[in-house]
Length: 460
Image (spheres, rainbow, N blue to C red):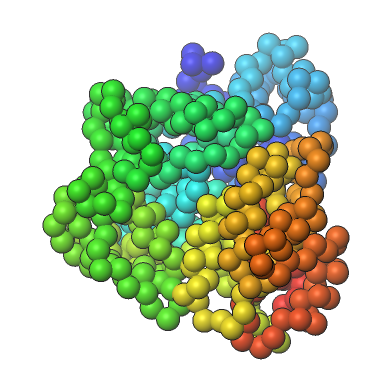
């Protein structure tokens, strides 16, 4: 569909317009004066917002929703070939385009397209970069995979040549993009329902780096295993960040923590100290997310003071070590961690946070991830004082692959950590009410709907 020009589009229809990413793309088009229609299964806050912005929203999907005046139909990868709207569009000869390809088409219209990729940390690093660019009055268009208070949602439509996008590797969707700056935070095993193995994942990230043009930049974590595999044959500029000052253009020294686990450090550029950085989000892992963001900021010729102010103004996105409140004197934190590396980072962060006992309610996300990384999950979770396992959140999967939350609880117990499987949220809430003590820290953790447990406890 490379022959489609965004500037020539008059009307675009979105199948599944209420999704967090699809709604953002629809609003970008509305800002550009392009007529938008779309369908979804039910009304939501996002569809209401789009309707107020001028989009025609249709509930339920029907061939009648596709009219001849539509120039393009955009759909998500979850839409099947037998979808009535997709079939109607093809019958009428209307071009169709999957969401990732359409995002790439939009991206072509920006001279400075910053794409943030990695197995973990994408939302946080994208948000940090966004805060820095906002502090520098760069007026960016932003697409981020979480709700960012500074922009009032998950996207912002700017009016400059600057585009910031969180780029996911799942189904190789980021290979549809056109980055002028590609940020690679880390490359680890995940999404093994799509990728064959870690080598397949590494190849995908290598291909992502190769998308950058000669005058562009790859900003990459030098701590990644065999980082030269990704950078050795690139024709573009390469900038590194990481823990080793000898291998990294940007690194940190003299890292200290405040009472809530937020870091302060000396920023090193090519091994030399150039300033002090303070973060308002907790955890050592966020030092490295901030180094990636700093590299982007300097690459855009923003002054150190602007970068410092931008980072300090970032206090987090929803579901990233987010304090929800307190019940019975117990602090409730919610976190999106759903991979063993993310769990380990979150629990290390919790070590620096005031608490007596650390309780974790974990909802595994997908059977395939739980089975593939089972031993790593058990090890990461064993560093809490008490672990409660909810049922596995199936998401897109139907086959349980012979793995269960009870099995994971049993594996954690063999490591000497108290672990309990409970079959429903009501049982978990009752158990926590009876067992959590004043001064304890409770983290609800996972990419599903486990956040609801903490929110229900806070109502009591």
